[in-house]
Length: 114
Image 1 (tube, rainbow, N blue to C red):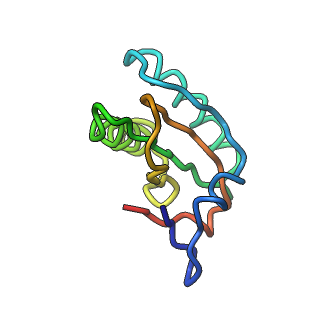
Image 2 (image 1 turned 90 degrees about the vertical axis):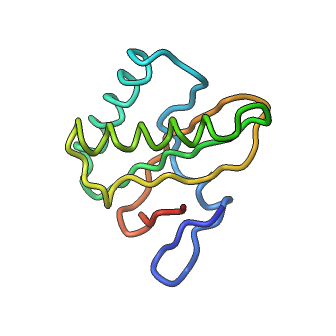
Image 3 (image 1 turned 60 degrees about the horizontal axis):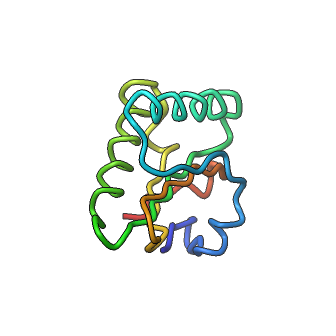
């Protein structure tokens, strides 16, 4: 996984070193929206940060996690007014189960990974 930071890539290890805001598996709509709402509060309180939605695909349904990450990004932008330049989806690779991490990073490192 690589997220571009100007001319230097932000490696998987660098992403893992960013502060983790939340981590969860598959949730019902009302629960994931509530978790994203807390993420919005953090992003609004620190405008110099961007949010990373890191998706870890599982073997049985590899596209399901990516679809969820795209849905979450759309929710943050369209419903909560977070700038599209402040939300990044990053591929974390494979996991045994559905897993999402929400991480925070400096605004200058925000580049779309996919």
